[in-house]
Image (cartoon, rainbow, N blue to C red; front, side, top):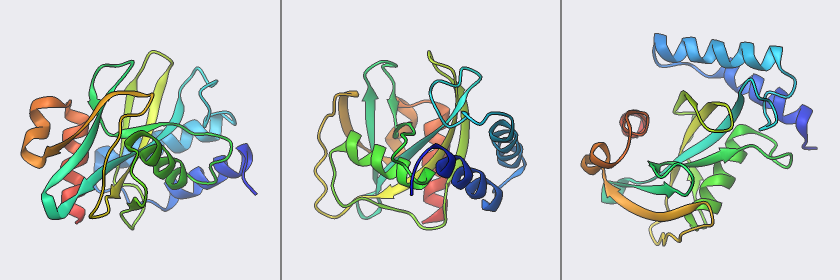
Length: 179
């Protein structure tokens, strides 16, 4: 069964079980857990104090590249991601759904081991407490622009810093370290 209570509980469990790779990530993990404990609606966009979001960096390791989206509203090159929905049973499921919808690529699979990193940032709607995953692209991946994007484009690893912000660069670096 999916729904608000199930996703909240699954997110709380995922954060509790996630081994943060460093002190900064551990502080964010604790912040996210405290947010969920204080906000039963902390998974949803309606929570104006901030809410968890789920994203996934689409990566093609054999070709040494990542797929980024030029976000329609923010006008920034970002990984795929967004708000959780009531049909999402887990953060991982939400991240994979978002990556599939926004990239147009069927057959994405999440890198095993849970989230890659956490990133807290302010957006026009509220603070986003983003739980970031990595999604491996199939060999025949063909991306398509979604309603959420102005463009989607593959970037070689060494091109990301020139087009994206530090958060995306750190996500790419951490993902590559896990491969």
